[in-house]
Amino acid sequence: MNIELLIKILNYQKDGIVILDRNLNIKFINEFAKKILSLDGKEIYKKTFYEIFKDNYFETIISYALQKIDKNEEILIRNEEISLNDNVYLLNIFFIENHIVIKLSDVTPYEVYKQAKRDFVSNVSHELKTPIAVIQGVLETIQNEEDINQIKNFTKIAYKRIQQMNNLINDLLTLAKLEIKEEKINKKIIKIHNTVNSIFNDFSSIASEKNIKMINNINPNFEIFVDEQKFYILLRNLIENAVKYNKENGLVEVRSYEDDKYSYVVVKDTGIGIPKEALPLIFERFYRVDKSRSREVGGTGLGLSIVKHIAEAHEGKALVKSELGKGSEFTIKIPKV
Ligand SMILES: Nc1ncnc2c1ncn2[C@@H]1O[C@H](COP(=O)(O)OP(=O)(O)OP(=O)(O)O)[C@@H](O)[C@H]1O
Ligand SMILES: [Mg+2]
Image (cartoon, rainbow, N blue to C red; front, side, top):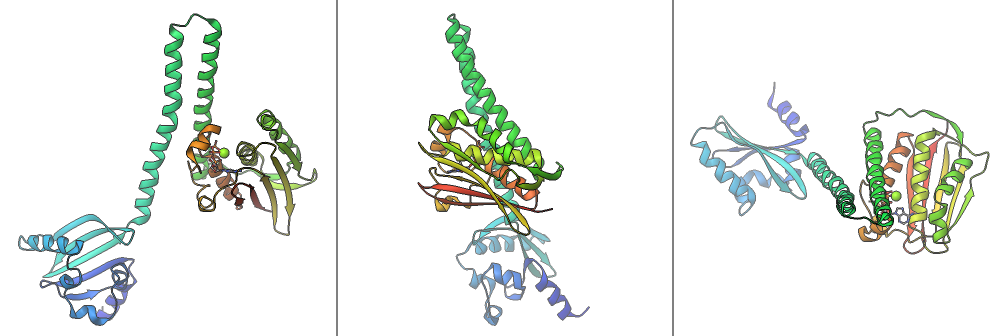
């Protein structure tokens, strides 16, 4: 195998590779390493690695590695994580035939995943802790309570909290199943005019508290090619938000239209709206625009994440437009048969 081919192969690697001699002169640096370390030009071959990275984190690492060379250890540093320009790299330093080989592997996506997992566990624990604390308090109080009406009031509070935990667990299960694509999507052509009416009915008491008017502008003949149960969950979440995040005397409108390839369902409200900077985040699990505001109206921040997953499971999309203080419009785009 010739050396040029070898160099080409090293330049194709998605790991950064730097080869130094014992005096830390750079003997080879592949393209990916140049990118990671923000180095370019032939100049770098005239300098030592030490000169380039003086007073840098690398200097410490390299000096540490050099101490070990004398002990003739072949692997000097293994799997140390370092941060460079907002990315996380796994650093390995080997000593091979009088040369030091530095290998940097980008593990940022894995780190992001690990962080998301940590956030997820802490969010779920937090969401369960609050209702459990309330239920515990209620049960303690009831033990010494003799007034039957008080007991009834307390049990109502506990029941509401149990429902809250139940909703959270159901949402988590729905999301988990959608994420691992375990649940089959059983698509068929359905009409949704009546479905929207029945969801409106479920939220009618909350809507009337704020005098919110709900308008079903779905054409009774409008058809869409979806999994009926899943699409029901999707619509329910969007309509629930449109009512929950609405204002006194507000409006909720659901309408539909279509083009050659797609069917569209729009849920529009004249509510509090979503700030621009929050728009890219609202479909994330547990994200809530304003935690204190959202806590007032209840919810865990899973609804829109479920909406997005259901739309995507249909090869469709969930889109949003919103203006703070004026209202929001969610559009679901689903491919036709
Ligand atoms: N129609 C809307 N108008 C204004 N803000 C909205 C609207 N829909 C969603 N949001 C904002 O986006 C956040 C995320 O919504 P999502 O439905 O995922 O969670 P949630 O309503 O807080 O809880 P859950 O739906 O899980 O009960 C909400 O907390 C709210 O701040
Ligand atoms: Mg919601």
